[in-house]
Length: 522
Image 1 (cartoon, rainbow, N blue to C red):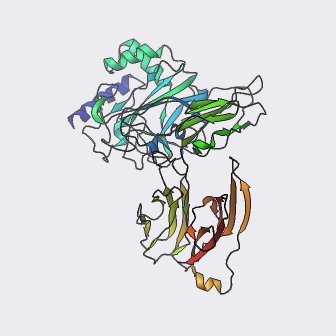
Image 2: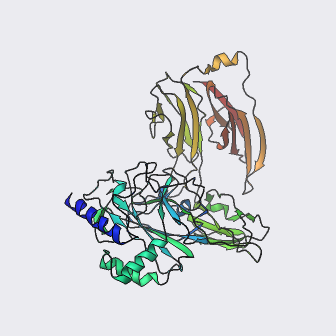
Image 3: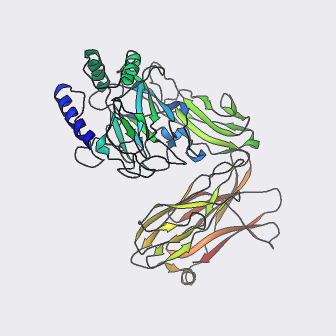
């Protein structure tokens, strides 16, 4: 407490003498008066980070959270679409059009905190050459250690990324670095000797009108990290699995003006690949009509023009770029990431119909084509709605509203992670869904539409499309047989599940194959 009073007095004195130093207490949480939080939907966002380099993971990061490409493009504002740095980990984001020192704040860093006080913090540094990085001045007045799920008051934090909850970015103003340089030159500062030395060694290489790199470095919150005044920084410690700073995105608020015509690259996401597929042809185009060039960011592949040849297992990252010409400005490169594995998998979740509010619990059926266990969680819904991670028993509490469930399977040493499957349904406060038996008295079982197509590897696939009628208390599954006698559960890949319509596909084997859709009342 003594330290806080002394610091308050010191900072108040500084606020009279130095324009660059903010007053204490610092800005409060997002949505509160005086907050500096930048919404991910802010109209003044000009661009987002479109590349990365020098990804260095710290300790305690599971493979699920090691996808740097998730930090590119717009912020998702949720807990999942992030890359976790781990303890002392770091990542450098790149910006093809740059960041410039303009009016007000110039860029904002988004983390994925689920609350206003669970704040995992990071230092922020900028560079114009990708070699010399200048750190923003920062302050942390949290006086005691914080447990793994402890709380940090945002009004005690300044100049550190992660100050705000998910969906809101921490802003940074490049003009502040010029003010710090002036303070240091005048000998009128409170910064530590280590901060002054690092700042002085790097600032001369910085062009505030063209920043091309932003580095985020995780702060280990056990009391060993220091702010720019040499004071201890505490944040939640220890955390595991997705330890450290969880980067969602970096937004550009002020971008250098380029008089050339902007262009955009269309490059669809790439699904996980199986090693024995051997090759993959890439397709991307620029709306300028200029040719797109591909490059490999990382991974066990060879590139010849637009054809990838697989050489091993692991994460592959491919970049599509277009450098522009006299008429068109460079396009923001598009990075696509996928896993190369000995086998790939997908998840099938039997559709869930709308439920009356008075229902207590029921089991959601979900399967992975690999046979590995599927995990489920509630992504959105009334607070007391829960689901067993592995037994998939969904428990309701009588509250009405929409529920969104996430099914996922992270893979293993030989199997790529499955793409997440999101399933939604309504809990109805008024009105009861129609029983399947009652519905059948005046309706017939849906007749599927089917066709045989080939996938990207030329393998024959059977596609089925049929309605699911969410207001009818029934579920559906697909069975398969080779002799019309013995039937086993099939695990189709869901291509569409929306507006009461289900579209799935299944591989067609070399022998006879029979399929049937089975509807069952709940």
